[in-house]
Length: 287
Figure 1 (cartoon, one colour):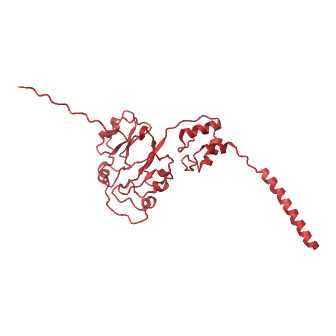
Figure 2 (cartoon, rainbow, N blue to C red):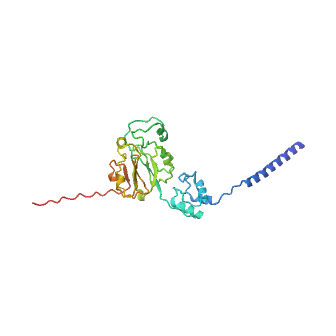
Figure 3 (cartoon, rainbow, N blue to C red):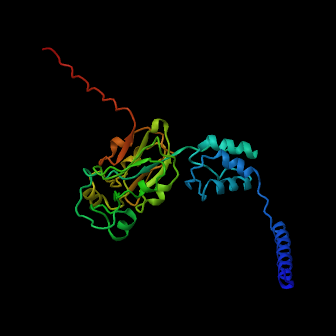
């Protein structure tokens, strides 16, 4: 073996050893010590990585929980109160119970209520259609029906029924992750307080046109008449921009608002049928 080869081998060995020593000290200098509780918190989470908590995934949410001094502003909608109680126990903090939520599409513009007046020959996505087109009906506020919310849902909680014209959210599968809320370009979907037996009283309309115009576009459009607001004893109903809104956090499900709505834009869902009061019999006097 020539002296040049030996010299080369020794030189490369010294360079490698020097580089290894430098890398070792650099690694020690910038070593990040990760709190082991992050793994424990992440293990308690459902692992859906849906982003419903407001973070990129369960790992990021776990890191936020570990760094937080309290869990008041942190919530995992998929796991709910039980999961947050487990997280609180791990971190030695107190869990804050929050009302479960469920998504709802504020549009009852089915094919029967909102007939088509035009046809759109373009990309079958709500995001694209809404940017170039107001919709196939005279209501520019209603659901386009192309199913962007369906594609965004990772839990098969939204059923797109073409014959209806408006998707249906399945309460028993919805985890309130909010993906559908972000996906809807018409801002029709909201997260509402989940009531016992999945009952709801909601104004299924987003049309802010004046009464006559709104009613012409959809037979069940809200006309902002204010009758529902007047009968509500809990300040749960507000009228703004010709449109009524029912706050699910204030609503007591008293059912006084729906009967006074002249356009049937207020939906009562999952309630037993109303009892029909018998008409009083007229007494007849014998001559």
